[in-house]
Image (cartoon, rainbow, N blue to C red; front, side, top):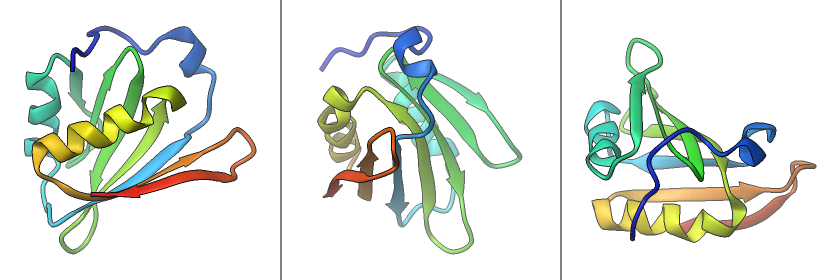
Length: 112
């Protein structure tokens, strides 16, 4: 599954967050960000413990929360929602992902 490196495409930058999720069983976002980076995604620290990762079709924040989970939220090209889930599957990550429309209504939910 090739990933296009570069900035988020302009048609997605105007959207507010449309994807959110929880990556279960991970206290630290850094190793997750590194996995995305190895596939050519941009990665940068966005807070003391959080990271922003992105490519032309997706840009998300990875932010650890108390306990064992990392929150994921940001923007994804809705037609590539399954590709994001497939990446998490490839990483061997247990997750819950939700996709929302522009009005904030839940369109899809998937677990891995």
